[in-house]
Image (cartoon, rainbow, N blue to C red; front, side, top):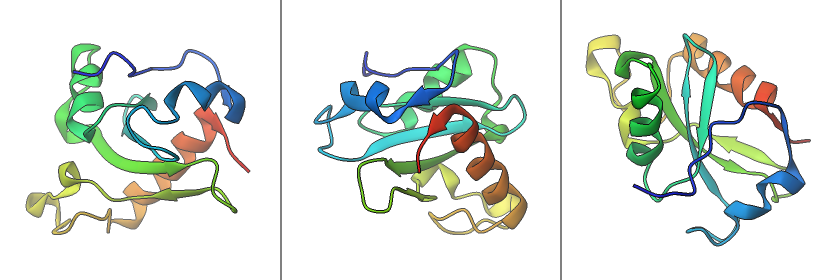
Length: 117
């Protein structure tokens, strides 16, 4: 598991994210969020890395969804794509979060914890 994984305790600015550049991706940060507890874990080589950190802090796997943050892109963007998002039992059959309510929750949680444009 990557030691670069962070569960923030206060809102992060883009400058706070510099530690994730090239660790391991040049301009992208993988993240997972717990939509029930409204937490985010940033970093890691795979979404499963930050998922494990959330699980170790009391999250439940059914509440965790993954994506990619591109804070230095113009404009900055969020991708709602991860292997952990494949959940046929809740009608999410692909890598991308297809459930609008979950996608909206993930969007809100990312923006609550990370100040991106």
